[in-house]
Image 1 (cartoon, rainbow, N blue to C red):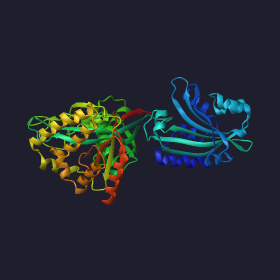
Image 2: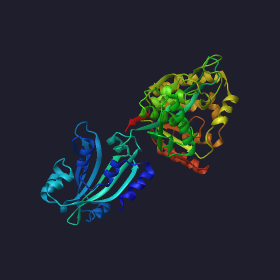
Image 3: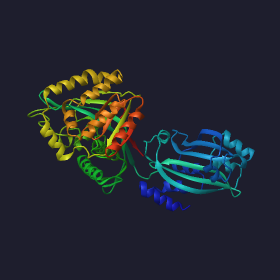
Image 4: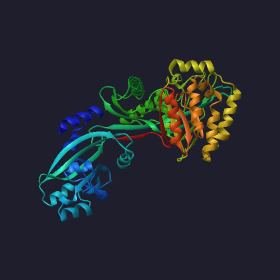
Length: 510
């Protein structure tokens, strides 16, 4: 195997590898000793799994044994003794027929590094590197390394050869954001459902207000590091320009005398109703502040970047997660807001106060159905909608407020799915949400009826759409199949079953 070629391929996908990362992926020496030299700490092995299993065809081929032959399957965490930080996660397969009784005893009964066992038994062996690659971290890898789901995970596979035969087959893994030679901040954000704006009449002296649900998936994952020049990688041109503009604003607003490199690892499409714009901008702003050691509150970052001027749901989802309701803005002459405008056109307005925040029930599920139709309103089109359709009738605002206060909120607090779902359905025909739905093609209303008929407790459109959400607790796959079948007949689309997220963005320094 050409290890240099593999490393080049990895760098093409994730960015520059540090010399230490390259060394760990390509070394033929004892990894444990190398880690002790790198960290300056004693490194130990903790065995997580140890059992004898029959070799599957792939392992049998790697080891040159028969399929079904017994092998010792061992999973270990290589970690520091002080602090217990997991440095490398390793899986090994060892054919029992090639082990001496003494070697087998050490391998199966003690937390001893394999390299040390080989050394103790004076075995002449060499390491043969087979592969080096990068893949997104699974939930399990995220738990092991305390990283976010889908962060890049580096791995390599190699064999230990003894007497011209494979003695052990090993795979080792560690996060990309480990063993770097630069400070790097990783920000993983949720997305959100925007259920409705509350008061787009303004006669009470306040305006806006919003209700929303934070989602675990899909999400945005980006990395920020100090850099001589501003650069953005790993995303489409629209997201790139948004990040560039945000970075310039934050660097200037915080008077930072440097710049940053931002790499997007995971993204959510723009203008589909899931709040990707706010999340990308807040993630960029928070990453820059962390890289340069600035402690700035999320609401101040939102104000700096021009978010939260109409709805506070995106900002609150980033900071807190869960089910959220905000109280809108003071409205009228000489007040904070004096016209009906979307957040993108409400620069200079502070994010609204959060007046209710509750844990979303963990056993409720959320189906997202995203039809392949034109993206939701944005830019000048969105401004025109606010201008032409506001103020909405005050009677509808009052009815909507009553619906939220006496049905939607109690449904969440008492975990009454039927009450909550029926309230979601009712909200679709009230106030500004009715306006938003009236501007959609007929397929959106038909899709809502489809998922309700398939068993959803409640269904609605998020923001200006086109994303439709459905709430339920069982048989969500059946609802998903119904939604997908409908969209397949009407131009296509995609679905995802997710759950609410009762925490905000994950921010970690590597």
